Amino acid sequence: MNRSLILGSALALGLAAQAAAGAQTYPSPPPSGRLPAPAPAASASVKIPTKATPAPPKDTPITRVGISGVWEIQIQRISGVTYTHFKIDQKDNVLTGQYLDQDGKKYPLFGSVDGKNVRVVVSLPNGSTLTFSGTHEAFSDMIGMLALSNESVPFTAAYRPKYNWLDNLSPSTGGIGHP
Image 1 (cartoon, one colour):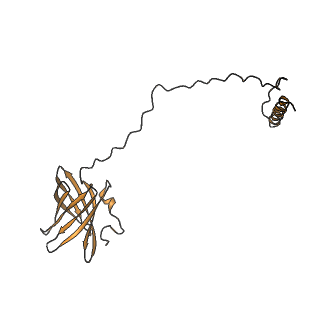
Image 2: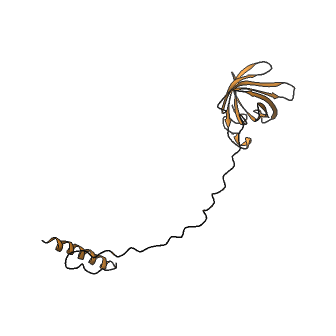
Image 3: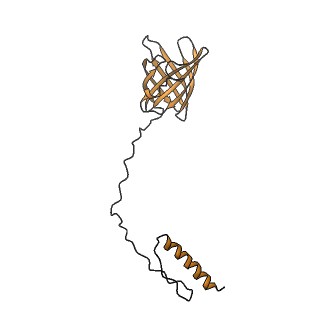
């Protein structure tokens, strides 16, 4: 069979199928077997805005200074672990803030940072103090010793990146009053 005849028959079948489906019909190919030249492409105009849309405002993060922030503390006694919290504000090497005990009571704290060394002193209403001495690692973990009036016990602390420090208190293990 002639190649032109095969191409013409295939094109005719395709056109017939399109016509049956309600598609637009095209004229039959010329007898030479060549397809007609394509129609010139339509041009579309795209309107480019003269001003770019402004970017949405960025959230302003709270800038953390040193070890400032909320810390969950694990005081490790032989009788069990006690969970408490610091809320520390650091200015230069001076620390101020609050200590939240396992009963939910808040006490003032003060202290200092010297490189990785941290010292936090909590003033209790009876005149005694809790002295936390340790080191921090990458401003996110602390380890050290807690000096009480009659004993010294180890503690660890972990930074909790929440803006409202009471959001960090969990009713499950690690929260206030739960060993």
